[in-house]
Image (cartoon, rainbow, N blue to C red; front, side, top):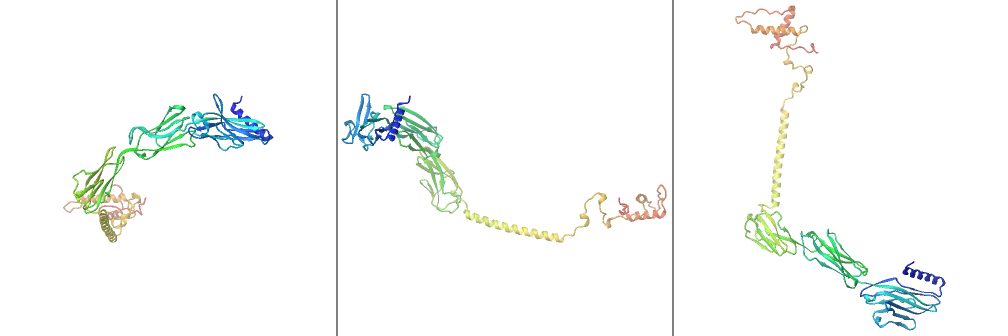
Length: 466
């Protein structure tokens, strides 16, 4: 079996089709199935009337169904005009009454207005045609954001940053936080009077100074709202001073004038205390402290070198920054010029030194004797060595004389010289065992020994080549 709402729509569709086909003895009333009204605001109850060509609209009216029965809240008669009961006369009116429109508007809707309303149309000669709609009341939430109970301190523990509240909504509102932080949300629902509900969403996060000034966004969605309700909440993270010193450029030299150092601090809340002190000795004369600035009222001196400290404090903590000052004899530009001049002089000296070495090398090379042939000889194996110079060669052995014979004769001569008597007598002749050589051959051997002098024997390579 079909639900009553679907049966009603189906009946209206069939009636509309019948009216379209026949064009006579037909009328139709069209209203929305449900209407949501916002508490305290206006609500419009639409009612469109379609009357056949052979029918005449005699009256259109609205009735409200109560537990005690139905009561009329508005009547429109083309001939007699509009009639509204006293209890609704200041809150209800027809939007544009005609034979085709019976729409009414109800102001300042309250919970008492919830119920079923029926639009009736009377035609002649067909009679009455009607359609009903249900009115429900929505309660628009009151939306606001409240800060956490404790201040956000840089580096502190996780705490409640803020709470987004959609108060006394019907039905309950959908609440969320939009943020790029790594926090988390906690949702809590509280039942209120008249069937309303309050929704609270807390955002928990561990504070850090790097997001100071960023914003969270509370987003609320509800049927009574035409669009999403968005409330930004700016973060206020408190942190100790972050100090920087400006003014000292590293080029402070003796005699420089109009120099100063300023202590700057980024802090939340703003700093309320600035102080300059010198750590390695007393503050020199001619130096004045004005708020966060250290002023040198005279030209710089050698004893201005030292370590200076800037102290800054706010409600969170006290911080300091040390600066080491070094007073040079000359400015950086003068030192750079001196270095350039010294480099140029050293370069010139080095160039002259290289030129002198080059000239000495050339002159030495011209005076050196040409290399001897033996300086170029490679130390080859004995069978591949070239012969020594001619002046160093021993006397060649004539052809026909064996090398062993030459060695025997030379050995005999050395022995004879070793034992030669002091009285002038000749030693006995030494004979070689074996067959005697011819006299002519022996004389040739003696000649060879005599020519060699040191008994060195040179064998002609052309005669004894291996």
